[in-house]
Image (tube, rainbow, N blue to C red; front, side, top):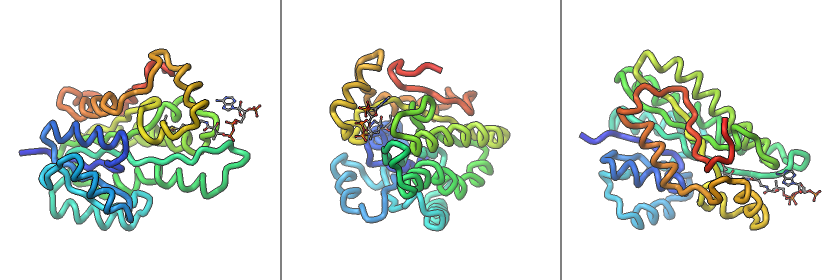
Length: 246
Ligand code: CAA
């Protein structure tokens, strides 16, 4: 029987690569997309030739606690317990701190960090009851090292790591592991939208001299989700071309 995964922000650059990888490994993927984006989500589903048995779309604002608890409980009633949760949805609102608005701060904290509570909480008890499961949180190199213009994003991404280590301690006795994948600059629309001069200066700082491929990030998610990774928990796996070594 195929395993059930839930991937937030599934139609983004890294989310798409993760979804494709999991489908190739015979998971059924519940792929969440933001309210209002139904058409582009359906287009994405068609474009990749997914069947409804492979990928099921779920309209979900990960920054809305009530919507998350209601819709995720429904998903479990219809589909069963989630085996693998990938908290991948994330946004940037880059601005130097002095010019950052409280809205830019809050939007990023809600979508990138508070969503971990909103999405994980409704699913967690059932995963523990089942006695196995994987939670993988997609953080960022910038949550580990900090980044000029990203006080909001780096704070949220660093917070994901603290959340992961703490939940890993609580989840271990139930056979549920919780880990972080921390991508560096990856060839996705979020990164390629950067100003060309800024992107060039960042790429110059990467020892491997290129952006990560989304598939390279997805491969790490698949590894942490695998049985072979059963003894790894509370860990942060960096995929950053050597740009920052902990
Ligand atoms: N370190 C030190 N100084 C820096 C700097 C840095 N990394 N980046 C910029 N500065 C300096 C500039 O040299 C400039 O100095 P002067 O005024 O003396 O010339 C000053 O800061 C202002 O820089 P900008 O002209 O770039 O200012 P801006 O207001 O137009 O833009 C910014 C500010 C939006 C933060 C822009 O610098 C930027 O986009 N930076 C990149 C932020 C970034 O890396 N975002 C990652 C997005 S992708 C992602 O987040 C995915 C992931 O997980 C990796």
